[in-house]
Length: 213
Image 1 (cartoon, helix red, strand yellow):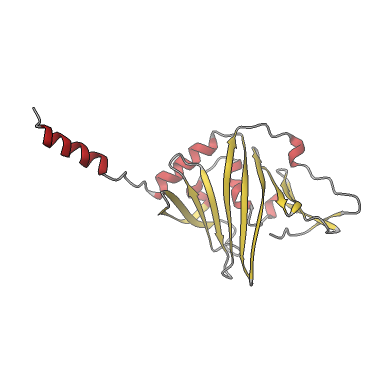
Image 2 (cartoon, rainbow, N blue to C red):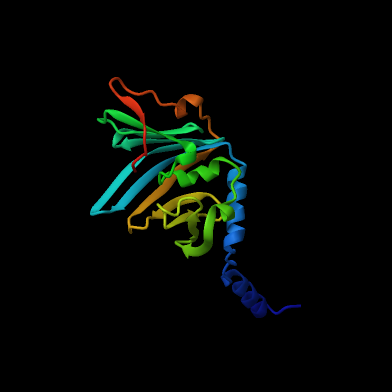
């Protein structure tokens, strides 16, 4: 029979042992499994852009729905919107006389990396040079999104142990960074088609173009 002191030391050693850090590929598979079982989600986001002498923060609500639908509705600045209906993306800022529409296949907007959550997710195939680092009790998966090498130097997805994405950081070749943090995440919530349509306000023209950040 194990002596009490030896038993206590054994238990303390077991509890003190750090959890094994997963590999980048194993964590990517966990994120894949988490999002491949979802149909929709909403979250509050904070977006911060730092570059070209600017430091700008904006907030709003993100809505995602499969297949290929996304809406970024900003409350600061109020009325700004970025909508992806699966075929086209539309970007509009109140006060502008034009709203810009871009075919989804040509989209290189920095919000678009989250599109891979809207289909069959395979992060290891979406990001070149996949790597993992520990950060604030969670993990960050980083790499370069395929097809976006000209506009994105690297992207980091900060995820928790369940595989849920809590933040995203994008570094551009010119040194500018755009980061998104997500809170109040709700999964498999109703997301009607109307959430992913854009009707231009009176006097606003819809034109083809490239959406700004």
